[in-house]
Image (cartoon, rainbow, N blue to C red; front, top):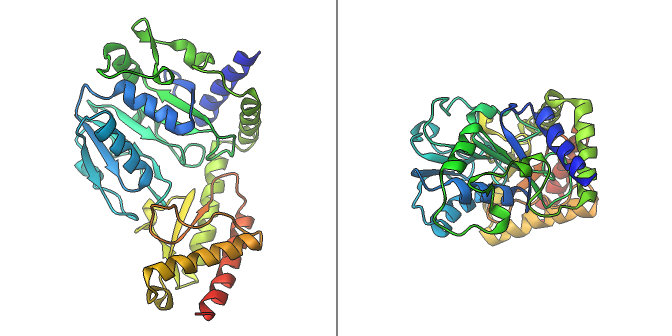
Length: 341
């Protein structure tokens, strides 16, 4: 019974996200992190590696490739709010990137920069993009995401998608480093297909599985295009509000790279910019604290490694009316706090 529930979760995920039939999908321990680490540790090594870095999670992948796997990757880096030069990617390399920078509010603008005839593998952390943004799965060889991000499921479980090219790599390559049990995707030199049929590496919480199945049922009722449209509608609410308020702007430098899920904002008023950096941080925390006190928005400060500002989750489980109420109240709280300076 439990295995059938897990297999159904895999089937429904592939169906809703329109994942190609010949791609494998499996449930992994340790959320998106576990799924992506399993892929990197199992697949990287035969080719040079390029890592694209523009926020803290992509930085984390690059750090693991360099310091744990010791593969000396080429790192194409951009500041928060920017993207690296996607045209500069050497596709004879394996390429590691995020579809959406969760801590910078910067997404890739499209999938055309990834060639169909690439020699290397494309490893994509899609955790805050799956179910909320269009994804061209044919341009990914590995893709991962969690249950909790865009569908609001329980934390701790990740999804791993593998293309036929990734499977071929897996079966033709044995990494020189030891693999922990939860990263082992092969059995007897071949891919362990049981993992991708619901026989997970370790025992998952079936309570969490039921919650995910319920989230998938909700998603089916809306459809993939509807889920994407909901997230885009949330972004439009913020865009319209930002256009009417000159004291705040998007951290993302241009509209085409603005995330519709992890929306990151910067305060740019003269009064705020004149404050010392420590006072700026204190000011922003006071606003976030007041928003939480009023039960309007919680944990809305920027990620700890990101530039000071605000971050709103605007994925498909969020209603545009709630986003509108939140930014409207943010404007009121900002004006109150700025008047106190």
